[in-house]
Amino acid sequence: LLTVEHKVGLSCVADPALFASSKPSRTLITLLNYDPLSDLSLLLVRPITGRTHQIRIHLQYCGYPIHNDPLYGGE
Image 1 (tube, helix red, strand yellow):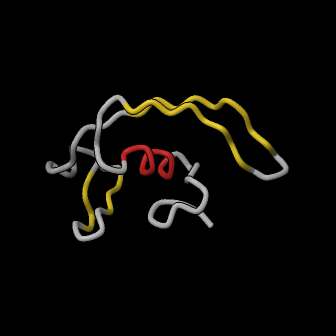
Image 2 (tube, helix red, strand yellow):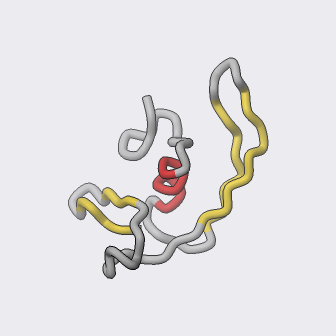
């Protein structure tokens, strides 16, 4: 993860080969249930490392933002 905006704590997934200041992070994500009518999923999420906003960032990066998350989510 790489911090982009320190004031609001905005971070993103970054390649450590390109950004030396990025920090390693790992989150295991398992889909438990998906509801096609609401287009919502129930996930089991286990952070292996403990970075700030790690779960939110990884879910956004994978294309599954947290519903109504004001910083990393979708609408």
